[in-house]
Image 1 (tube, rainbow, N blue to C red):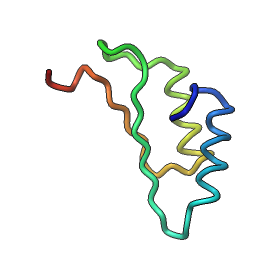
Image 2: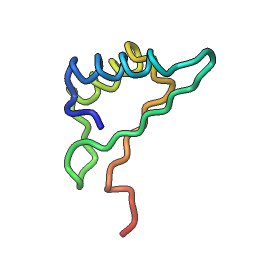
Image 3: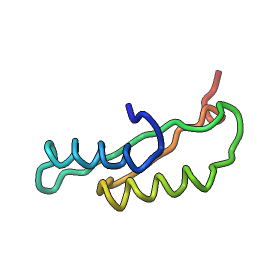
Image 4: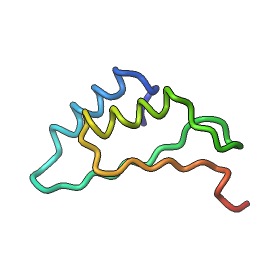
Length: 71
């Protein structure tokens, strides 16, 4: 679990992935953030996701809002 959407969290993930990653690995990260109801993604969260993709070399970053899950 990432403690927050900060540069430190990106660094923690980069460090962990660099220890475990092998050539040709595909890394998929699934996140849940923000309020449970709603569709808005803040600019901070958007930038965080882009940093994960760029710096941690995440192959795919998906967001799972509860608004699309059936009760």
